[in-house]
Image 1 (cartoon, rainbow, N blue to C red):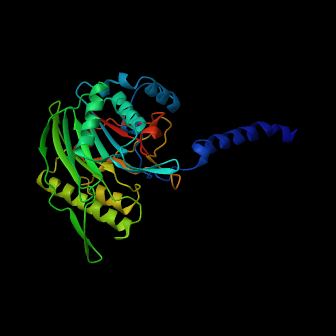
Image 2: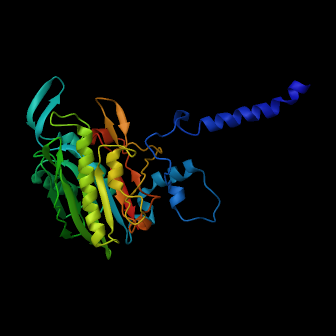
Image 3: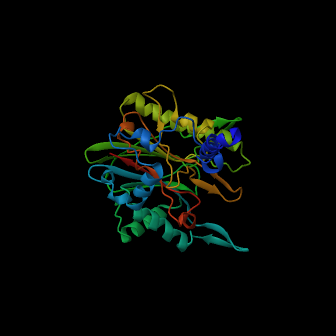
Length: 346
């Protein structure tokens, strides 16, 4: 009798433990996410309504994303996207190499499909080849119903891969980056892809975009790839500091492929000082499955968050965290090895 009387409490304890262990996928922590990670619920204003289960909130948001009032009516939608070699290069397909081949049409089609479907006002692009490649994306989007008539194309010492930006709104100014070189082991190196720096005015509000594509994790003979990336990150931060020194209330969006994860020295160099007025705040994007990775490195079979959008303190209150997200289109891997990030500003 004493044993049977313990069955009820013991059964409840087992159920409770099972619930705790299933709270995250495989019971494991998301190691690529820092401890302080503002979720959509934390960033939203407090509500007097009864709480809704998280999975129901997510399902509702996915079902009708464009019905959210924050997606228009005075807001700004921004996407950053590494489109994986939208350029002419030697490509290995199957068992043979094709010389001087463009990005396959099937991949281009999926990139355009993903972008047009999400209808951004501004797109920051990485891994663009020539200016004509950016113009091709612009025209393809227009054909698909997304007209972004204003553009910026720039780069650094890398003669192959460049940065591009397309905008619904006119570019009001182009920032001048004065320092694009650094010293390492007695040698002078240049910022591989440079810094894209433009400003726009949308719905009466100013925005300044700084786009980068930092040194990849691939080893090179010239030097240590991690140190190269850290040097580039510091140069980006110096440019940010020069802007904030002149205008501490600058509305900055610093974005791109950082080629490193959040705890790394490179990313911490970009976000900068712990001083509240100077620090850039990353937006912690998740996809519809609550996963945070943005890139799949096929050779190593590694999934990681290496693409970022960070904002200055002045702009942070206008970030609509509830609808910012990683775009996890079913055909994402047919377009690029990266998934795009969409930030929405009120």
